Image 1 (tube, each protein chain N blue to C red):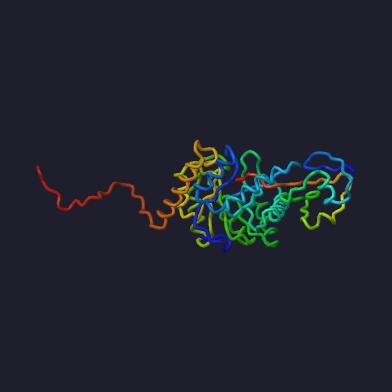
Image 2 (cartoon, chains in turn brown, purple; image 1 turned 180 degrees about the horizontal axis):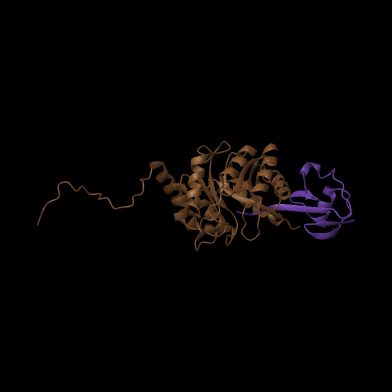
Length: 255
Length: 65
């Protein structure tokens, strides 16, 4: 699997928010086997509390994907991306331009505009988007080489609300890396995304809010691996009726 | 002069962004800055002059999804 030319074996991208403690986060990162973790930027206090977190991130040795979470305008998102590039020394940015503060639905118009500005400025953009095909096309035209459609609203854990739309995205963009971002609640949701042919899954709350985050991180990694293997193996078509799997020919007659 | 730092008013004597950051105690290298909504790169902080009422954002790495 490659994102912007960077090879990664794991198809799980893990968020770093909402863990009970930094130690639990570190443990979850390890047991997930992830190679890419997402982080954010927030207001610093004069005591330098952000520096400690930055040190612990670097200790994980994982590649950093900074986000623009919480940005509601193009300018906010672009400025945050520029700050993240300097701070984390990476051209990667998970671009979020949020339309509603309650649904956290992407503002796809602002998203395309911000993506165009950032791609022209040399960023490698991972846009958090809906499953709309036309928006996907506009994002690719803007210079994105990855698309991150939602599975369900951020933090909802509802699983894939519209698997058919994701299947359509896979068919429409056969060569574009697709990452389901947001909405995954259980390992079966992650496996389903992978069976549909998604290239990877980005999740956070499902692991951070599990009873045992490290255990759930491992379970997600296994589900993603299983789902991918299933997709590659070519699942059978569904049938409306039963079809005997044991041959009927050669049945004995006892009556 | 009075400027707004991370949404709170502060009195600073320094004329440049670099000087104000020192004065306010933001000495960590793990911060990024924006003035009045626009990013200011680390290397430019010494050149940027502050004015009364400027809005400064000082951000650091934080947990995120």
